[in-house]
Image (cartoon, rainbow, N blue to C red; front, side, top):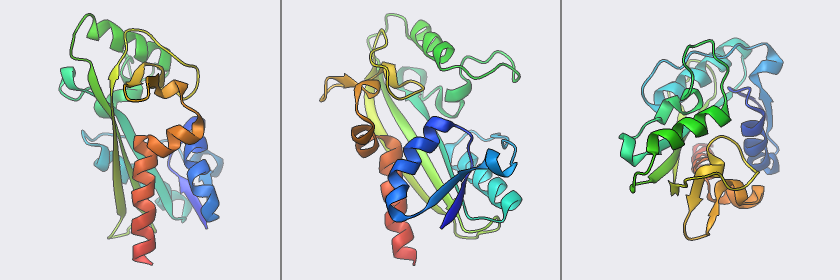
Length: 199
């Protein structure tokens, strides 16, 4: 089955594709089909994921998969949350930057003792743009924020996200291990269960 992925993030595509490929699903990034990025005006992950999935399905006529995810830091009341990818942007025209986002997070956390945080992923599947029963799945991955980056794999906040029971950051895990444990991996596993139940 061909699905349009409501994202142009190459690293996110790689993660999702690795999990979905064994099912014989072909993920096509929306940019390859001429779909522009969708506005994400909402304050919740689920509303933004729905917005993106319906937008991609509407413009392509294909079933669509959208992920809205981010980092929620306890000391910040859940921020940066849905603004995670744009955390360090000063204007809407500023390019997104993992390095600037990480630097801002470390600067704002400073010497705080409470460094607990969790990643959230909400994945939405729509059969068509007007699908009245989108399939929605959520995953959370709990850890804490280090004072300095470790590891070179992954993307985003991965080099700062420390999993104490593994004594590793997300950026130090193999791709397979990260996909098995991560918020996105959990959400996809739940999505697949619900898709199979809906058949």
